[in-house]
Image (cartoon, rainbow, N blue to C red; front, side, top):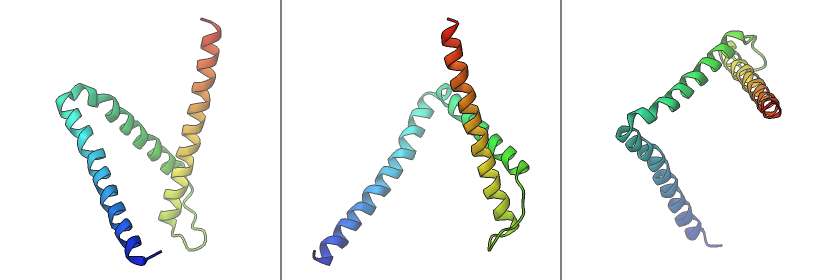
Length: 104
């Protein structure tokens, strides 16, 4: 295949990715400003996610391994702990949902 066609296709792809990113950011903001009460649930979810990652960071061990510094190791461990917390919450939610269906 001719390299010039590949270059043109890559540039078109870059432009499309940038346009999609801009639209993915701008359009929800326009919707949020037209309905500010609808913005409450996503903000609460984002704050909850930040809280879970913060709890994971606090619980993580900061022991440096390999080439990673202790700070990077602490962040990686914190995100892994946060993932474990979210998986546990999902499992509890699934069990609660199924058990509550039985008693309805």
